[in-house]
Image (cartoon, rainbow over all chains, first blue to last red; front, side, top):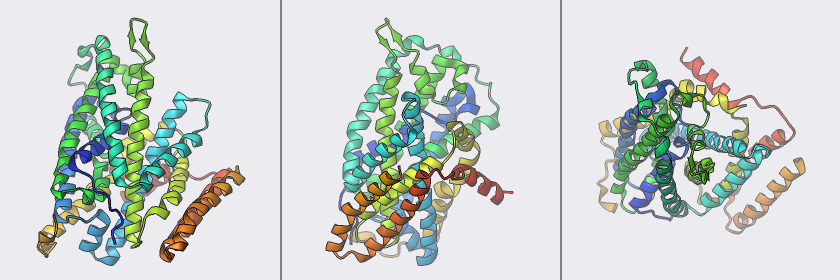
Length: 365
Length: 68
């Protein structure tokens, strides 16, 4: 029995991935070691991200109509496949809680008096409603929200033009090679690598070959992030590395004729909408994956219990936001390595070597 | 605070369980109740002010242990 009857067209996938990749990245990226070369580090990480995404699409095209959980079970067998899938589900769960917490932390800066838990519960409730309505609803939301974000993005860029000083992007040889690649690898693992979750969504495309469009989406989103990093550096210069949320601090500077001031709240619009998309997608993948792992007939009853678990994990993730940057730089690339590239690559190599799937794919669209 | 948590969980049960019983989805019901039980224990502990260890610290220790 099919768990999800919804279908999404290819262009909605582009919007979904753009929203997913650029959400957190417009606000907070672990580029501190790369200093003024953050934008270049992001450009390099796009290449790495494309490599990852092409592995995911190759797998998705090899097994049309199968999600990651089903592919695991198909290639690795029932027992090992289930254990590996359980690992992935933990990763999605933890990732959703990390993003939820990050989201809540940002709002405690905008609204200092409100307790953190209020934002977490309010957010996860909206996401739970979206997930209960299925992938089609999330995909349609993404069109509206991502269009709004792109408009605001160019608006921000335009009003900051006056403040920019491109010489702040120099000198180019300020950063050691090691630091540079550390930053670009960390950027890749927190933004592009997390698109592994789309392995849960590719089967619901109208035409499965459209999974290839994810590469295009990653390039567009990567360029947007890189330009925003370059913009922030051109405005703030070396000051940038001390801020927790660079884009937020950068837009505080805006002052167009004493009229357009305090534009930093525009960033929070970005963050509200993109964070909603990102958490919803991760949440959806988690719930759907669990239902497939346990061979349930519907995923709807799992939505609310997982919502509570994500919220609790979000609270206990870390004490203060300042713990997150060292984690994102040092530990997270290692932690996410097996999930983002290790296991998918292993699955692809195994499938190619064993010549899976053996059946002709004539019965698919 | 604790009564609020209990109220939330009763609300979730009231929303989900009748539909599941009507459709005779027993397996789904068991998974639902199991997950809800885990969520309930965790959120009651949180509401009572239990100090959980930091999750990302735990992952850090685990990764360092594996790669040592």
